[in-house]
Image (cartoon, rainbow, N blue to C red; front, side, top):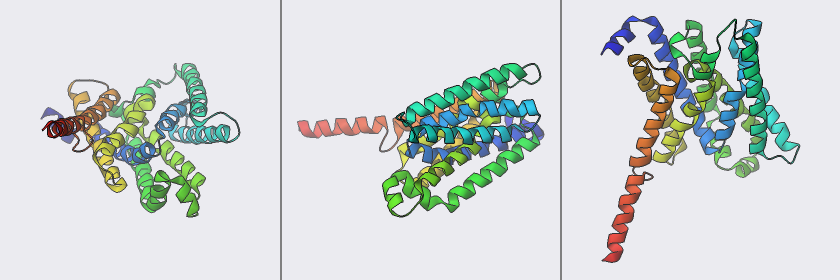
Length: 286
């Protein structure tokens, strides 16, 4: 009860909650397409590759949003260029580019550490969210949700069958890079909440949980958004009550929800499949 009383009384906690819920929603929505397209490693790459952009932004005294978006987009383009113009496969290109970008980010952080503490960008600190950060997250969230709503059919077809999408005349490559831009925006919006290192948990785990529970993309998107928002609320609660870092607790909350679905999901859950298997064995024995 103390947490909810404080939530009503303290503005910083209200901003943290609103920001966390929005991050959970947009991560769940974009994560659904990332999971379906088998691009989990790309999500990890983008989340790590924005680090040098954040550090450079602090050096220049501008909002980290601009530097992070630029480096995120450049990372996606760089991976595409290497894959398309060499024998190096996509997964190797991702590992090559994001590890180099992340290493550069660590070096830049070391150079500016005396002036600004950027460790919260690595691990998140949602309780320090400013009003400007909250509104930035809300605006980014609105842009992402609007883009998914407007281009839902194109995203649906290309996510399940790129060959069919190309046959229909859709610009598959353009859609791919469009998703990369949205992924970069979501990653940047998530920095204050869960940080660079843990943002992939918000992108992948709620969507993977929803994937276990439904076969319809529209339902999966709504469920992933709900699981993301619920994880944010649960993580905020436990991090505040027990004085724990918010990012890791939110990440563990997403994992806990996934484990429950993994065990108890009506069709894909381990428990249901075990019971069905045992029932079939009994029938065969009779």
